[in-house]
Image (cartoon, rainbow, N blue to C red; front, side):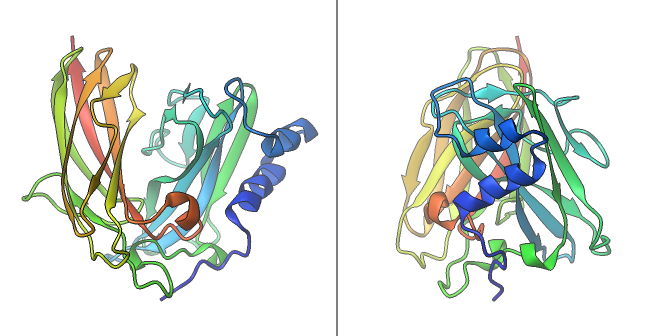
Length: 274
């Protein structure tokens, strides 16, 4: 079972990335500064890559919002894009406070050039950060194979009993679901887990993309160690197309983030009309 090969701790990883990418000394200093309630920037993070069952590869990305209160919105466009290819490749436009690990992946083909790169660029409060992802062997992570030496695999998620299931940061996609502004819309996810950690499966719901705010009736909940059904309602403040993410984990992301081992994302598209 592979282990993460990069030698840095999560905290030094973030600092190191910003030191590499920051174009000015002020940017590097800002990356190491204490969190503030608001007014700070957001930077993207490349977490590593893993092989999928069909031979393709997933490049996993997260981010660091240096605010411990403020949620930041950066729409897809000149200030938030992935390249090469379509500017929107599933990256978030809504950034929750603090460090958020492995929030989306970009899938590349089995014959992807090991020297090629996929870059996520963010401009936040005037600070531009472009973080490249690649298949560098030093950045291979456990992800769907489970954490090395722990015999623990991430929970599997599916949107219904008849839809495919997925594991890992790339997870599974669902929808579209139709909703109306201001009207709570039920969202249900099915989770199964190996129970290796004997800890509950934690569910957390997030707005991932979309023009307005999203309020969840139950933003977090717990299932049994082997999973179950999680339900929340989402209320949307404005019409448009949204992407909602739910994360299911069986270990704390803050301690497992370095290996991306212990959680799965599921994404659902919601079309909201007035």
